[in-house]
Length: 425
Image (tube, rainbow, N blue to C red):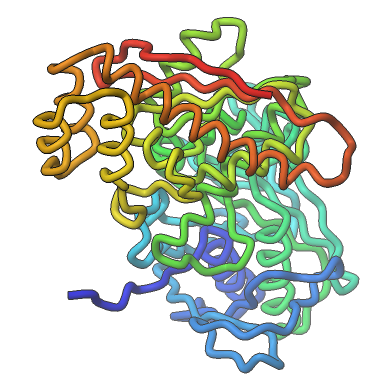
């Protein structure tokens, strides 16, 4: 039975709610049990665009908002803090359950917010053994200065090509506005329009970041504060697509002229091993987003695009499937059977292939009967796949600014042997 999948909210929305609660507490109010925050996108001045939103409940003519529960609030030293637990809904998210902490003060922060798991007092001179927080990022909204800092567990950008400047905390542009808008709303309610300093931290952010693509993107020390729409749609995979596109932007910014797209960690590792001249940043896990990734690559000035995969994904590419997910993109085993017959496969093998439940089993059966036959079928599938992949590349290259890149296809066996390599222009 199919059940309704619960939506969640982004780390940017969590940080905005924590900022609203912390500023409310800072300016003499009580820490609220919840905070209603505006959702992206925002105009350049921080004004939220009017748009409908299922979670916020706003009508299409009003800016969407979302009510977020506040887990905790309190005072530490010269600053106050509030905590929101990030809820990703039913989406498999590495940041689900993370505690997003925002410290608020009217004076600049000079210390990291936490050390050995305990908050330290901000706004004091920086001891020589401490590291200053990343940032600050100064924003001016509605004639109020709001400064953002990245503390423990919030990553720092170290490579160009991302929408955040190198050296700044990995808080993306829309969440920055969202946090600042929420803080300003709390300050306005208290009748305050002076400067606000907000320090964001995620106590276990560095550990959680190991389960993301941040390291490949040059984001070190923690997670990113993300969210272009403020909510998380279960299994929408928007975050993965964003990571693919940003990985390509990093590669371009580093001056790379070729990239390797892979369907997973193993195929990426095998593909990069074949091309030791490529740095790690050239490898991008396109996963099931074949057409999306190739179109994004075509919009950038790459001279060569390498694709690494296994036979099962090759069959789906040969079918012309733009999205190759195992559950949602059906495998056309009839195509495999037909190609085996055209390659001279015996009748009993063709009949056996027609009963196989998976592509992996079909390829294994062909290999046991005849490696030559398997290779012939693989080569035919590879040519069909390259034809479709070139269509995706060429249809995205419409401005004529640069030539269509060379396309190289590597196919590996489940035992990690290279089965074939083909190239097309």
